[in-house]
Image 1 (spheres, rainbow, N blue to C red):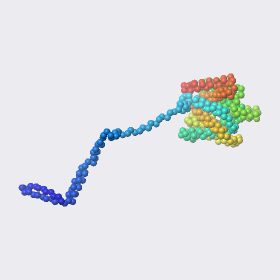
Image 2: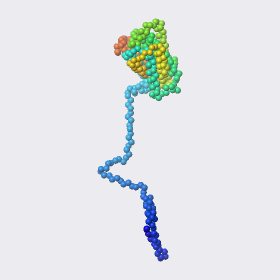
Image 3: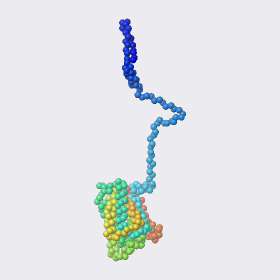
Image 4: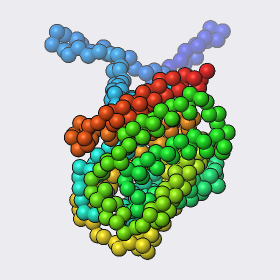
Length: 396
């Protein structure tokens, strides 16, 4: 119990009040006082500063900086830079691509001569190369994210390019089996000349006197090289000689006419490659269209006209290597025709014959003669003038 007294005065009379409280009420009042004191207590209490002495570990109060991971820049090899420059980095790109195509064809010729394998029928060889070309061109387009059958592609031009290209291949194979190889080379190198004149008719390209002179100079060099018609080309030359013994003069002339038709269709094919590559803005599409038609057609011709020969591992490896090189040569050819005038681009193709002769003379597989050296010199001078002066005149 608790008691409290209160005194007050009223007109001199003293009145005393005595209030008696129970323990329960005092406890309640005490609880209310405590609760009120808790409400007055501040919510945030001041934290005592930590005691620091010389043995305490000093730590920075700043936030740690975020780790910045620097990705090192990938270094591009000089070879990749050169390929990028040759593909689309210079005004000489078209002519350089044509030169690459000729060099690759020259490498293919060297490999065919130096690495002899079992004799494979021509249509079977063409089937392997066309199949490799089809697969690689498809993978190329898929790699760069290009549509295989895009709506913007000139399908009529691509179909014509495939048909004319395969007709050229068929006639060329027919001539190889029936005409001496040196004559076949002369007929095949009339294709750039035919392409220049066909470009004047089909594509309305202007054919200047300097360009005609360059083509004439290169072809004259070719005549100097093969003036004696004695150039041998390895094992294939022996096969041609064996086949020539079973044909008379009239059939021989007929085969030469087929070779001339092959040259004309090859020139038309160059014009179609240029038109389709410029319309689709992708030269590999022209290579793919040719592979789509030529691969199954060559397979059918292999089964229909020749006896299938199962190649050994060595022969198959050589055929695949030549197929890959053939694909690269066709891609560079299409790119060169896309960027450059046909009359200028076609003249660069003659450099293959000059390199072939110089390689044969250097390796002593071909006898050196004054005519061959003069012919190689004429071709190199003509191609050098085209490479140096051609793009500059075109820009002007």
